[in-house]
Amino acid sequence: MFKILICDDQEIVCEGLQTIINADPELNVVGIAHTGTEALDLIPKVLPELVLMDLKMPGMNGVLTTRKINETYPDIHVLVLTTYDDDEWIFDAIRSGAAGYLLKDTPPKDLIKSIKGTLAGMSFIDPQVAGKLLSEYAENFGKSQPPSHYTFTERERDILTLLSQGLSNTEISEKLFLAEGTVRNYTSVLLKKLGVADRTQAAILAIRYGLVSKDTGKD
Image (cartoon, rainbow, N blue to C red; front, side, top):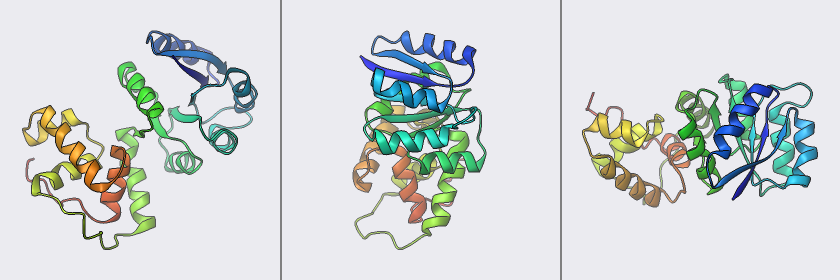
């Protein structure tokens, strides 16, 4: 059973999250903190594998808390769950070591999936903020010449393009008129070709090297 620490200054939010998380037999909320300072005090006592982190809190905010957790406890995953989708919050949180960034309107089943995926080493970025994050990476890195081993079929490039826009496998399958299982298979091939572990890293490389298509031709 994986141990989860919730850090959020709203009591009602913490209670709701605790109920959702504890309903899964593989997860257990071992502590609740209402400030960053409380979270840092609790961590050595409850030893969580993942901290579900709000950003705007009194005193030490979630960005600074995430940075301190990443520096002191590098094996602990921090998954941001917040109402804020402002560019500054997004970029600061990711730069501080957050493994993912979700908004609080994320459906419970997707929240649980994201928690488990983050624990497995994957990254989850809410589709509503993915475009901002990817644009920032594209601007910072520029579109340099892609390595020669990055070769894709037309269909793979279409799927990579939609993946880079934050679409889920279900949404990609509907847009391209493919079975969802087929999209999953293509996605696995793309991750292997790119040499990355998750969709977010694949999207970042796609933007960085200009690997995405201008138009999937399926609208």
